[in-house]
Image 1 (cartoon, helix red, strand yellow):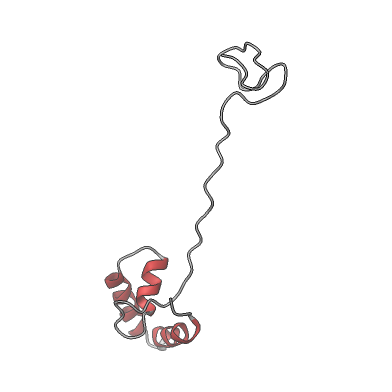
Image 2 (cartoon, one colour):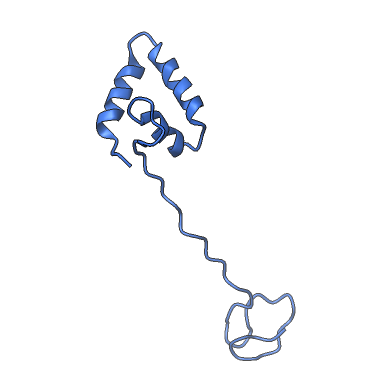
Length: 94
């Protein structure tokens, strides 16, 4: 194996050139992290698009998310209803 920068002959197991210090293998740069935005999705909505938005954000089925929200509606102090209304007001449209 030879250094791509200076042409020095290198051992096959070498990670850096002994003469110029250049790396012998390509440096892997991770892909930029894709950020997800929580938003209301208006296509395919039933009431306000809140469940569809949460389902897309958490990468799950919208029907399962709707079942979870219905379960939260059944909790006695109406936590689900309050959270749904707040999400409806606060979350931006797509």
